[in-house]
Length: 120
Image 1 (cartoon, one colour):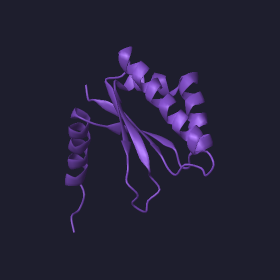
Image 2 (cartoon, rainbow, N blue to C red):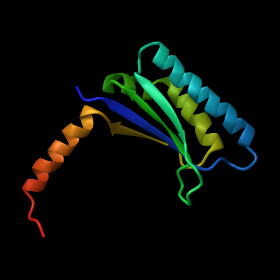
Image 3 (cartoon, one colour):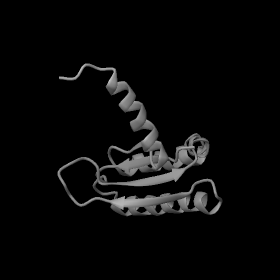
Image 4 (cartoon, rainbow, N blue to C red):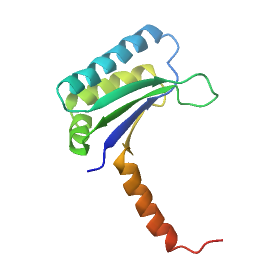
């Protein structure tokens, strides 16, 4: 089964909410850490980006089984955390992602589709 992931990204911190944003970030680390300790996810990695002129300032890459990730995203705890995130940063989002063997699977499908298309 392909390894699945969530890309949980965020943008700029709202001015005047920097301290609260730090607290919410720590809540998110504890949230994902708890799911990792409980075996619901395989791992998570927080990533902070250097200023680059874009809207994305950081993200968590959360790896785990597709069903478990779906259950987590649908949970009241995740909805609450996401609401708190949205109160302190711009442009937050949660995107299902393919990692590991899932990349090979998706690229294999892409290759099959590409073979049936006219090439310029």
